[in-house]
Image 1 (cartoon, helix red, strand yellow):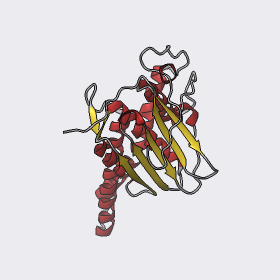
Image 2: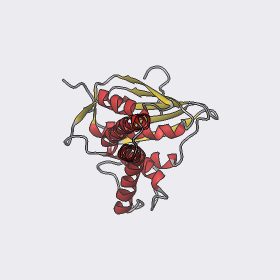
Image 3: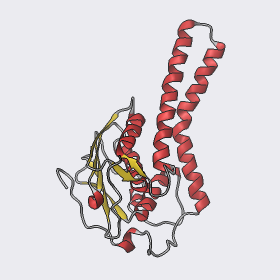
Image 4: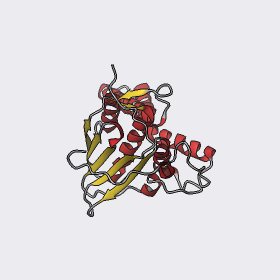
Length: 245
């Protein structure tokens, strides 16, 4: 690794899950998990969709040209926001291609930039591979969005993707930075039920880590300092990353 990236010990296959791992006897009901995940996606898109509806109502009822222009601008802006959120959700939560599919890192960058557009957070990317296995990319996208909770007042997310099994990292820097709620779930803590919809994404991160024999570490060296989300791979992890084309 180069620069500020420093990885600890990689997990064993038993720790990371995946094939050969013991069944998890302590996990939320599958229907509960599915319902909470759907609620999470709906929560993300309901605001811009609602704004589109409001804008259409203004166009239908309002005769003032200036008000109609404001409504059109609101509709256009909200439609872009809804599209960006759905495109990000497709990579983070959806199937994203066939089994074994590789997805270009550029697609992830585009989706992340759309998600952040007009907000108080910027993102910088350093990637060696041109593409990631779809499950590794899904893991990264969820960690990226989860890391937004570390900088509620805005700031920067730095994403580092190394080759093969060298790992990935997201560094969140901003005013009043803090470790997000439910980080213990993202790091693999087991539980029998999800406390609320805010816990569904970190719980999903834990599931994705086990699926690709990975481990996530969330750390903050000093109070309000950068929060580092480090993904390491265990010895049983494959090397599916590479270039497309």
